[in-house]
Length: 250
Image 1 (cartoon, helix red, strand yellow):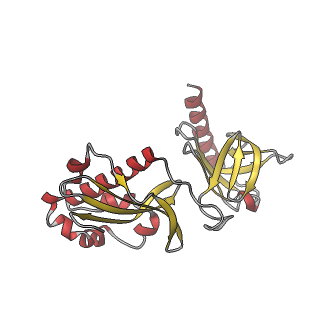
Image 2 (cartoon, helix red, strand yellow; image 1 turned 90 degrees about the horizontal axis):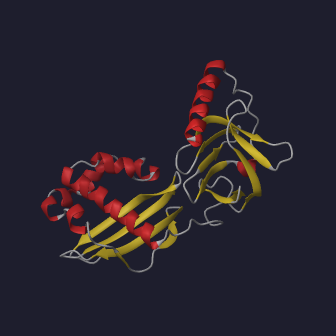
Image 3 (cartoon, rainbow, N blue to C red; image 1 turned 180 degrees about the vertical axis):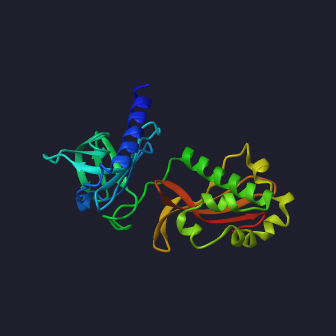
């Protein structure tokens, strides 16, 4: 209840700030704080060079959009909010090597504004999370194949792939599947199966991006071999490539 009330207050504050133009005196943020910072629970703090800042908690109950970054005079905490209202974060460890610790929680910089991809690499998800990630990708791909429409699938892939393709181009690329969609009902075929990963998933460079590469198979009949490539996009792993071979090795 308290968190919901907090969200309502922040929303009202946002409206007031827009209506009264009270949030125009932003100060530039220290360069080391600029970036998209994501915690393990999904909480995200976005800090821009001009002092603008957004925040969303891990469960989505608290959100600040179009706010400002306000560093305390002693440099030991900062606030994200409108006209002085919003969450305050105690700085346990200042930004270094692409991460910082706030209130005991580690946040990692996901947009590379202060570190290069070779300095700090994303962590490989746990096996359970990998199972969910891969199955979700297969289900989304299967829906696109069965519907002969890649609009939703295109919307869910990483921005770098979206910007270089269109739903129509994806449909053309996967025409072998849509033309024989009765043989590629992945949602039905893999619903009760776990993927078998081999070799072990790894982080590697793909076109200058830190990519999560997952290869393996589903024990369908015939077997479905796959290679999926993901990159971190807005704090979540999103597809930048998919290769599926049914009944054949990759």
